Image (cartoon, rainbow, N blue to C red):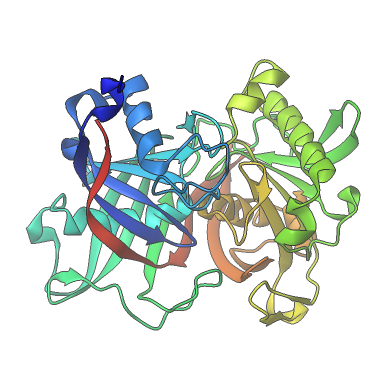
Length: 393
């Protein structure tokens, strides 16, 4: 006898499939989700997992919209904001590939660049705030972490301008430049360095002891020196992601850092908090060849950074980690600042597996504690497909 529970019709939900920075994901208006999924909880997670195609023991996302990497297994929910001084509320979900799990603990800096364009096109920004020509300022409330982001979206004839000649390493084709401004990524009354130290000692049982900079700007991130891990800092994905022993070491270090940062209470909780903190290692500038074959000369960058996301080396750089990099580099004494040559700086260019990225940070001190006022970077975004996603009812 046929199992009638498997004969339910598919439902369809309005959605856009968008690239933002070096990531892509499925974007929804909050009002378009089924009522049960308009609020946090198991119903929302089940729906979005099915949209992406997770969990997938084959690791391919063949039966969903996901791309089977941390950069392409993402969901975004946007709603009109009732918060003063903001246009939209932005909620981000990092979808696990092989587990029935969505991590809502942090932001995606890359997809943040697609929020403004989506919000304008979806009618979530008041029309009087959108010029006929020029730039529209979209004021975003990042609901995961409770922070404000300003997106300067290029406008042509009253519509979002997506095409252009701005090149972003890690993205194949040029597009229009979009400027993101992360405002007070750490509140002045919050600890930029959760332990109170610019450099901490991480003792990781069975792995070793390491110096580390633990910072919470953009996204909680742990930085180590590449040389302390046996690396040069010029590695590409294939040098790391096929090495299961190295990945296990990195995860053990990340878990210990999460504990010292107060993000978890027990080490075993790190397994269910994969999105945060991020793990990265830094090195002074060196020549290398990016994954595209493009040569990156040492004199074109201030340092090299390699970062992991969801347990794998990222193909470029997470936008939120770039906020952490820019902030840490601006503060003399951190491992990131040391790798960049020390001293005070407001901007830097760092090398990553796909090329390089420039980021600016304004930091200062208040009552002896470091604060970060804003971090600025350029990205690009565009709609890849729009219409409806379909999932079994």
